[in-house]
Image (cartoon, rainbow, N blue to C red; front, side, top):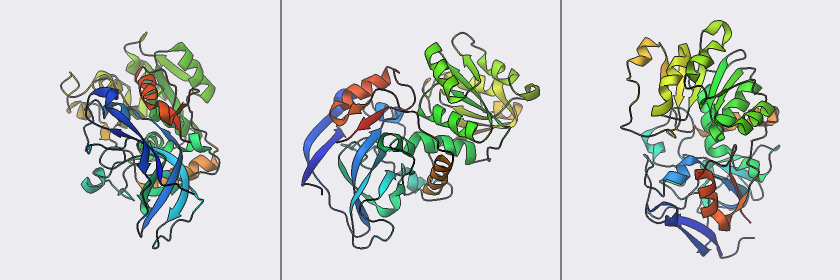
Length: 347
């Protein structure tokens, strides 16, 4: 039973991680007619969460927002008009609360948790009954908390424009959440996965996941050409999950096959203004370059079914932080000490 107060974080300003403010006695909200009250047990962090308090996020952010898009918890109570849920069910949050199915709309872009709307880094939260999905039964709270952003983005990259199929080749970059999920989904579908990393230790972890082709991008600056050479008959990669941005797109264009897809899902390697390939290179390489902003609830539900049927286990970093230690968690992830997803346990 929810008490009258709970713990929550807010982002007050853009002065870096010092903008994160902790309130240990925030009022517990009450659900409206078509809303549900969720008690969170875990949340997980994304790169987006780190750059919001630094003022570098390119999508809408409201002042004093409660951060975090990813969370897993139990439904505590429901409004009088709710028909979809009942108390006690295990749920995860939908990143863009209004993106229910089909292509994303401008309206849905304005409903991102932890940015335009209050998010998950708190003990209790109220959501529309349409803004949640049922958690796969094979996942614990920490694993379930990783799905909302990284997993769904990876799923959309592989199934949102053209359907991944057995025998295709997937190229992932690094060992962050989206890249690891893309590798796992690719392997589950019977695809060949090629991954890049700069760490021998992380390369070993990728091998344990089943990735057979690993390129150290620091030792091989022409890793795009190397990746292409690893594909059947050297034709190139079908799906590229591009997280680097300006510093890596040039190599992705070297790796992609004709009619292949480069999914732009991040900009870890820099932002606007940095030297990068021109749009005509999509023509000369006969490929599609596509921006991906997470995915819809329909895609989330389809992904969860695949996770459950294939018993896919999200990769959660061995270090788990408590809600009280959120600033330390932000710094740990900023320093790129994590492998896979960094989870926050919420008591």
